[in-house]
Length: 167
Image 1: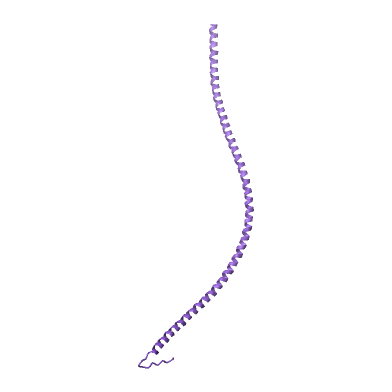
Image 2: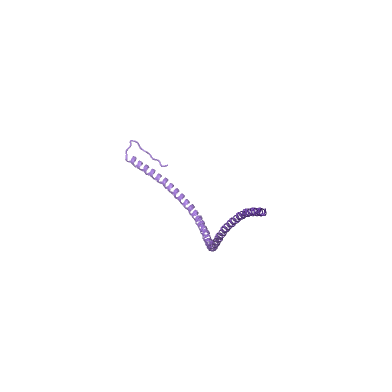
């Protein structure tokens, strides 16, 4: 009976140890799952951190390139400003020359208009002279024709006498 009691006690202890072992195993499995989740989260965070670091490096490189480009553009702008100032000065000089040429052109136009009026007057006078000359030529032609007719009549003998009166 003592052995049975010891045996029962040992069996009871064994059962308790098995239960405790199973509980510890289940707890350990839970902890392992938690550890795996934590490792996975840390790995994800590390990957995201590495990605962000790469993006940061890329943005830093882009910023430096933009900065260098901007410095180059500023130098180009300063050169352009210098050229623009020179162009503005040259433009002012050319504008002054242009104004002088416009004034000279306007004076020549006015002079030309005066000459054109004189020419028109001379053409009108010449046309009048030509017209008067034409009228005189026509009168001369008429008189020549009349003289020819008179000469022709005077060479013929008529049975009657023609009397011409001057008017």
